[in-house]
Picture 1 (cartoon, rainbow, N blue to C red):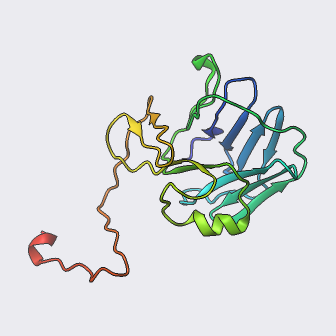
Picture 2 (picture 1 turned 60 degrees about the horizontal axis):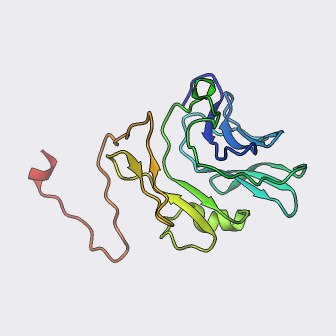
Length: 193
């Protein structure tokens, strides 16, 4: 979304610890970990659809940014570990006073939260496929494909998320998922009218 301002994508925790993922006004990813700020070296193409992520390897103090399966930034100066607790918040900052919160404006599709740091190999393995919800170290998985209602369903532990100030964006067309074992689909002339 081109808004000319920074927008928060992910912002969990309310116990004084801070972990936030942002999209900057120049389409870079920005992570805030407690009192440190990191920004990706490469930008995401404006208007493009890609899967973005931040991975924090607390053991080696390395933070990496991803766009699809490519690293777009890396920093090894993480000085403090993140031990936050509290609700997961997508598309809003986690200020206690909501009048001070900042909001994401645009479309968001699917979120995944893992217990382990994701390297390029794991991002390639899991990044571009649908998950079952039973993958090793997967904490939360929100496909966000309900299309209606007030909740997005977590396909791992059932920690469903309530939509507040958001609405479903329905696609302009129709899509059909075909598996390799399918015999295809034949439409009659009446179906196209």
